[in-house]
Length: 369
Image (cartoon, rainbow, N blue to C red; front, side, top):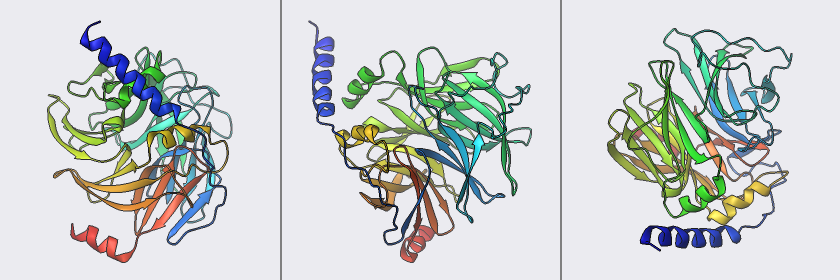
């Protein structure tokens, strides 16, 4: 047997050993605050978040299952009233037809009842409309396009889709200023468990795909990585920021050439979002892999594992943790937004969002950094 296959088998054996140690952990069932952190319960796996500033509300991706076996939904969360309202599937059950110029012309129609959202991104389209892009696993693997009404009574209207390449499992999505998008293909549908195991040993399991209305999807150079997760794009569309979950780093990559422009060492980075002042908020998982895997067994309450929220300077690629927690009131943070003096944090495995009031010294240090 050559060195390559021997190395792969050895890596697979070690990774299986890691995952064999996983076991269900006691979830957090209490919904009480702790110091400056206050949980808002009543959600279902609120994995990713986007802010509607005019509405004073969040769009929240309530993830079902990555394999599409369980449906999910998109909801609005009113920040002042702390109320949750269904956004999609629409409460009325009525779905609008596709609109030309939104998504791929071959989109077969709206997603069905199996709709299961994952990563999302909110952006202004070249025509001025407000667009929400959503990774969907339910019924089909796709990017779904929604038009957003950012008003006191916000609403979503489905406008189109782009079906993922055959066999790809997508994770996160980011809009490009020219109307296209980029998305992370993190695993293969045909062998996701094997990919995950090999990714633990730093074998590449995925890459970044770019989609354009003319030409569809194409793989971007220089983006192969072990479990690429969250993704963000610079304002000019030239630079990608990719969370490489199983390499413990955020990579800064030229979108055109694939050149690696910098890295930041951050433990198991999940989603990342832009702050108002042009920095990135990165959710980092600080727990052993067996604890993270075990969160898939949490049926009620909240996963407890240790996470951090890191503010990352995209120029210097240096980060500082501004919040971290393990156990109550919430673990397993996956996405964060910085709004005023608060962090709003979502999770992939639980029933709550977390509202964290940042202490004055943190706000001052961030303002001066």
